[in-house]
Length: 195
Image 1 (cartoon, rainbow, N blue to C red):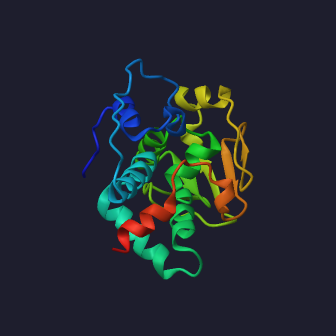
Image 2 (cartoon, helix red, strand yellow):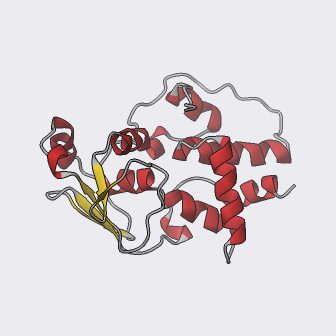
């Protein structure tokens, strides 16, 4: 399985992203070298695609598949793409506050700590739907990791509800574009792929 092993703060600095969007509270002390060169249109489009891939932790081929799926759906392709990315199980668990970062959520899913509608899942890319109940397995609730998560304070988006005491959350609806706070201009990604 391919894994992106680029140092997180270095990548955030190069893409101009605040590490808080990834759930990381560190700040880089290095200064970004400013150049007076204007970035080309292609460069801007590529940077937006790289930002989205980095934030959601997706490699090129699956990201391209999400784009193709979004293009076939009715509505605006860019908005559909962002909704598909937000509805990934690893992202939903991160948004619910059941994991500190998307990477941690992905690892916890692969290790089998979560159930969706009572069924054990091990695929972080699973698309959740309105009405799905995501819960930590009964055997996993006693682990120190989930005791630590109960103490975290996280604001959940309006399209999700969470019960921290029971370590479970529910998807109320599909997110609208204005409910997604990811700093990505999805229209530039659509322009890049439509060339």
